[in-house]
Length: 350
Image (cartoon, rainbow, N blue to C red; front, top):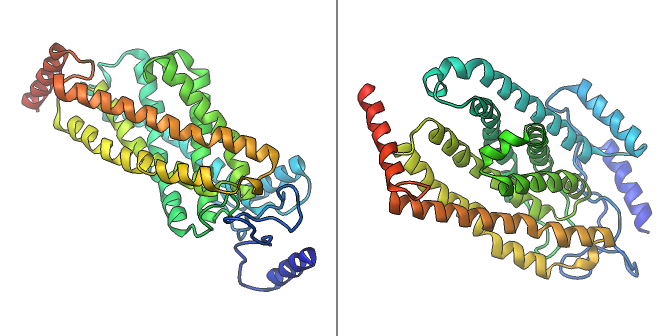
C-alpha cells in the first residue's frame, strides 16, 4: 500500500548516493491536485523533500537549528525547515553587517552628502542600506526556482526546491530585520515611508509573509505563488536608490530620471504583468487538495501581494506622470527648478 511504498522509498534513499527530490506523492485526481482515494480532506503529508546540506553559517549553526526544531516540533526529519532557518539566520547576519558597515564607512565616504541630512535621516541612511540586500540575495535563488518549477499547472501542492527554501529564508530574514526596525523606530520610519498608510502596509506585508511562507514552502503549499512573490524583490534596488538620490538633492540629475524610467517597466514586468497568470491559477486550481485551515489562509493571503503591487504601481505611475509634467514629484514647478539649479551648481563645483 502507499505507506509501505513510502517506507521502502525512504530506505532505498538512505543507502543510495542519489538524493530524492520529492517524497511520496498521492495519486492525482483533478487538475494537479493530490489526494488519497476516498479521502475527504487534504493530506497533511509534507511533499517537499530536499537533500540535507551544510548551511551558510556552518555545521555548528546547523546543529543549533536542528536542535531548536526538535525541541519546538518534536523528533522528525525537517530538512526543508532546516534549510529555511539556516538561510534566514544568514540573512539576518548580513543585515546586521551591512548596517554596521554603513555606520562606519558612510560618514567617511559620503561626508558631503550626509552633512545636509536631518538627524533622523542619518539614521534612515544606514537602515536603508540594508534594503539593497533582497534585490541581489533573494533574486539569486528565486529566479532559478521559477525556471526549474515543473509541477502541474493547476495545483496548490508541489515540492519546494532548495532554491525556493533558500530564497524564502533570505527574504524573511531581511523582513524580520526590517520589521524590527519599523517597530522600534516607528516615528522616523513613518516619516521615511511617507506617512502612516505605507508604514502600516509594510507592517502587514512583513508580518503575513513571516507567518505564512515558512509553512507554505516546507509543506509544499502554494509554492508557485511564493516563487513569484520572492523574485519581485528585484525592484527594491530602484526604490532604495531613489531615496538616496532624493536625500542628496539629485532629483534634477540624469541618474534620478533614468532610475525612475527603468523602474516602471521593471516593476510592471515583475510584479504586474504576471498577475493574470497568478489569478488564473488562483481561481482554477483544485482547492479540495488543501485542508480547511490551508484553504482559508490561501484564500485570504494570496491576493494580498497582488493588491499591494497594483496599489504601488499606481503610485509609481502617478508620481512619474507628475514628474514628467512639472519636473517635480510634488507637482510644483518651483521645486523642480530648485532641484535642477542645485544639480547644476554641483556639476560646476565638480
